[in-house]
Image (tube, rainbow, N blue to C red; front, side):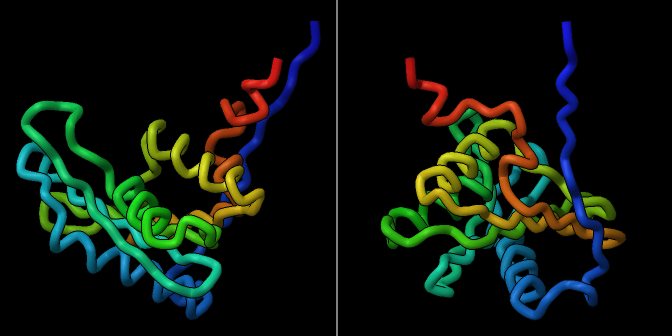
Length: 160
């Protein structure tokens, strides 16, 4: 027997330590919270996706009384971006959450389904997607989606 150690590298920043483009992407994600439809959970999530051509698409969570018919902010933003620019890679995604009248102090991480969709976009273009997770006390910056989903199921998993 042997063991494999799987590690995730997360860089922790304050807002002022982010680059200007990272700050703008976070702000666009935060702005999306206003339009989130979250009457059941009260947990509003906004996401902003920057493409390699510098175009930014944003989305928010959309709940539905018939669970799981709703959709997370990350997938709304990614699917919208890919529908408009199917040949342009995603460069970065920023995610922010708001509940009980305030932004979360620590970053919220994407659910498993969102991580899988983000990974598909990353492998589709064979290019890292920087993940920026906003919290008021700390911001996580992760080099790529594989850091969030290290033992992943991807296209190469289908090879026999």
